[in-house]
Length: 355
Image (cartoon, rainbow, N blue to C red; front, side, top):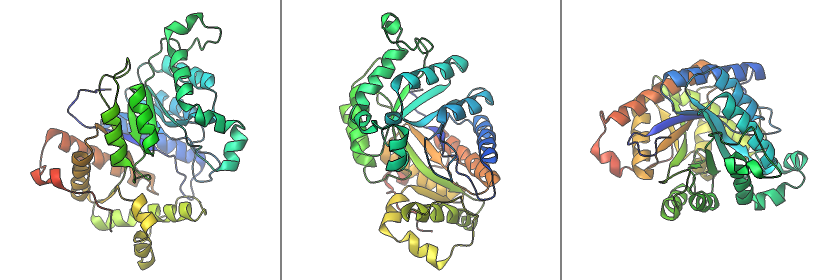
């Protein structure tokens, strides 16, 4: 992690969403192909999120998917965005990521969150004492840090495969609670602003104000997630966007299914975009052609002052997804080299996408 770099890093969060007509194998193989393209395009990291009991999400086991992608790439960092720690034993998490760190040195990230990543019934099936672990989240992070420390060699309980292995921990969050914790522990902080937009600015302010340097990190390092859909034209991007809109409708109505093929934007979908809940969720959805998305991205960076963006691109067609991420990498390279950036963008507000 280049904490002192002036460049804004750019990365990918893959939810491994299953498109209608694709198998889970297709989806996971597409993830590997996307990671290989991301590596060639200069992306910093490729993360998987943990979800359970969802027909449309194939990322139930991030450690397995991390190994899948890391084995098929050479330099890009691969990790979890994240492991939902209350679902798991800290010892097992340390052993899994210690193993990954030994197999792929200096390439593995461990993002940790405390949400269930599923419904409450499934969360109870995963771990019956889960709520106790939610309250012990800071303590369990400390346990994982201890398992990775060489100082743990004399302890009665050890994760020998993790001791001394370099696997940085990131605190994930969608509220201000996580910001306080990441600051107190002196760890990098990743905010899920691709869907939880309400507290982004407050959480970032808390994190920077309260940050305490640690052995892991000397200065604050904040990452923000954004939805990105880039087409060859505004109309092409709007068409691809209809897939995400329908996915959000399914999420809000508890009627989730496979990613649907894009259609022309309808009057009904435009009305959905006006709903306050949808507007709030899509506040940081950058949809359009390359020039439009570049302008929105530069404004977001100026407003948030984050050191890294992690892009979420939920597009039906795998090739369209690769093309969008390829163009986003071009945008970030242009922003980082300062080409064609308008000074007034420093004062530009971030608006809900109103395609």
